Image (cartoon, rainbow, N blue to C red; front, top):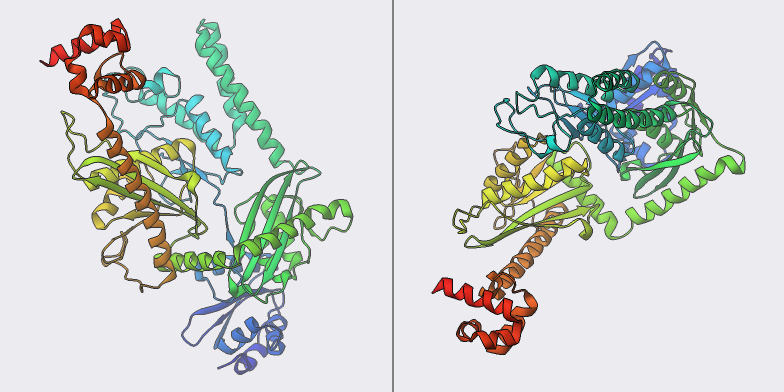
Length: 608
C-alpha cells in the first residue's frame, strides 16, 4: 500500500494545527510531523514523489495515517518532539550530540548525601542539577561543595561510629559526618540544604547565609573559621557573577548553526557565543537516513532537539530559514521567557561566525564520513543498536588483567574515541588485591578487576569526567559482575559495561541471560576485538616489563645507602652478590667508601 491509498482519509482531515504520524503495515512508526494546517500539510505528500529518494521510500512504505489535533502550533511542536523521542521513527532526522554535558546529583536518597557527576537524570529520588556547560563548570561546582560546604566525597557507609576522621577533614574539605562527636546529623543536614541552594542556582541566598555565619564567627573570635567562610563567599560570588552573565540576554549572545549534508549523512557545527565570545562548539550528526533532506528541514529538527535541555540565546543564526520558524520561535521564547529570533545574518560582520561554523561542518563531514572513519561510525552505530545504549558509544574504555600464576599482577585500560585508539588516555595499574600477608601473591582475576575498575572511576569521579559511553571488560560473566560491583560501590551503576570472552568471542551483558553471538565478520565485533586486543597488548607488555624489573633486582637494593650507581660499581668490581659478600672492608671501602662499606658488611652479618 502507498500513500495514494490514503487520499480519501487525507481529504477529510481537519483544518487545524496538530501532529500527523505515518505507520507501515506492521504498525511501526515511520515518520512524525507537525502542521499548522493538517489537511494542507499532509495533502502536500500526495505530490511529493520524485523530490528525494528518502521521500519516495516513505511514500511507498506508508500504510496508515494517524493525526492528533492540538490547540496551537507550539503545542504541536512539543508533541512532535516527545513522539520522536519515544518512537524513534525511521524517516525523522535524528541528530546525536558528540558531547554529553554532565549533571550533578545530590544523593538525598542516601542517609549521608554526596555530590556526584551523572551522565543523565534518573528517577531515583535524588536531586539533579544541570546540564553544565562547559563540563569543567560541573567539576568546579562539585569541588565547591567539598571545599566550602564540607559535603563528603568518599563512598564509605556512614554511621558516625568511626574513631577519627580522615585527611579530608584535616584539610577542610569535609565536615566528617563519619565521627558523630565532630559532626552531628543536624549539622550535616544543614550543609546538604546549602548544597541544594547552590545546585538550584540560588547562590545569592547561600552567600547571605554564609555572610551571617562569617560575621558570627568573627564576633566570637573564631577567626580561622571566619577566614574559611570569607574565602568561600568570594568564590561563590565569582560563580554567581558568571551565572548572571550567562543568563542575561545581552548583545553578542547568539548561536550559529553550520550544516553540511551529503550521501553519507549530516553534520552540524554549533558555535555558542556569550558576551561576544565563543565559549563552546558542539557537533551534531545524523546518519544516512537524513541524506537528501533539505537543509531547512535539518535545521528545524536540529533546533528543536538542541534546545531541549540547553540555554536559549536571544538569536539563532542559520543559513536557511526553517519552514516552521514561527512555531520554533514561539516554543523557544516560551522556554527562555523572552523573545527569541531565528535569523539569516546578512552583513559581513554578523555572517562571519555562521560562515566559520559552515566551514567547520564541511571539514567535520569529510573527517567523519571518509574511508575508515565512516566504517568506524557504522560499527559504533550498530553496536549502539545491538546493546540498546541510550547514547552513541563515542568513548569506549576497555580493561584487561595480566598475571602469571598470580605473580606481578597488572592491568591496563585503553580508550577508543570515534573508533580510533586514544593513546594519551591509556592507563596501567599494579594490582594490590593479590598481595597477601607476608608479600605472597594469590591469583584472583575477579578481585583484580574489581580493584582496577574501582580505582579508575574513583579518580574520574574526583575529576568530574570524562565518563565513557561503554566499558568493555576482557572476560566473561564473573569479570563483568566484579566490574559492576565496583561501579555500584561508587554510585555509578548507570554506566554500561559488557564482557568479551576470548575463546567464544561472545558479548556478555548484565541484563541478558544469554550472551550475544555476533557473526565473525560483524563490524561491531571486529571493533570490540580490536579494542580488546589493544588492551591485552598493553597489559602483557606492562607485565613483561614488571617481571624483568623484578628479575633484575639485586639483594644489594635492600641495603640502605646503596643506590643504582653504587650497586653497579660493586657488581662490576666483585662480579656478583656472592663476590660482594666475600669482600673485605678495605676492598669495599675502595669502591663505595667507608660508610657504605660498613652498611654492606652489617647487612650480610645480619643474614648469617
